[in-house]
Image (cartoon, rainbow, N blue to C red; front, side, top):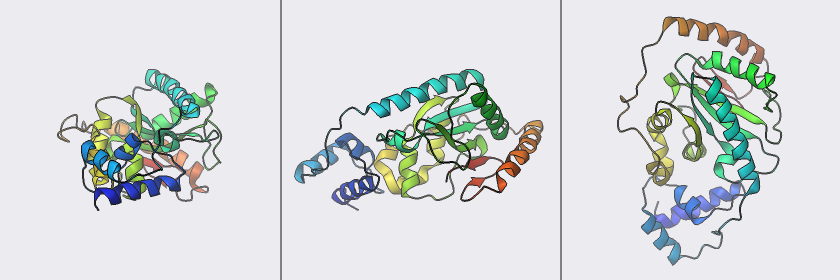
Amino acid sequence: MNIFNSIRETIKYSQKYKGQLTKNQLFYRLIGNKVYTREEFLKAISIVNYQIIKIKRKNKELEKKIEKAENLAKLIKENFKDILFLGITGSVAAGYPKKNDDIDLIIITKRDKLWINRLKLRIFIKKNKIPHRKFNKKEKKDDFCFNLWLDEKSIQIKEKQNLKNAIDLILIRPLINKNETYERFIRTNDWAKKYVATGYSLKPTLPSLEKGGLKNSIFLDRVVNWLVFWPQFFYMKNRIKNEEIGLHKAFFHH
């Protein structure tokens, strides 16, 4: 796929989600397995006049939703030492949320700490009356939707390595990043290069997966994770549709 086709495909993809891309956004999201420089991109844009490319007005809804997420991130960072990464995904990360959209989030915990932290977080947000999307319920304006949970052991996304998930991956907005977890997450999911090589090349990654690697698993953590997982799983079991849920990962609202 040459750069002109990459530009056309990227614009076509954004139109599916009614997105209006700036030149910078278009460059960052170029679809294709080849890395292009900004100079190559700007030259291609100057040759063909793509009317779709405009500078967007300031998106007030975007700013409000990011501010709400940043405030939540401060609370989580102060109260949850085992949560290593928190990031914004979905329409807010993409930059064009609708007024009534919720705020999708990804969380990465320490190894074997996923389900105890999910339980603690559910208690915390209920106690502090933080608006959040309920399992298997429709989204509401500015509800926080914790729709992707991973622990360090399972930071590679093996399910549905496709264009949509590749774009979602490079658009994640980090809010909390301890122990270079975000960089390890990006590096581990290098399959995204097949779909968005240019955008992926601009992301920060660790030079080696050994750096900041996993500590040895602690038996007690594995036991507690297992014990806390099953009551939550059985509570959700009859309502699970396309969700993918396991000991080390949980994809909600798949």
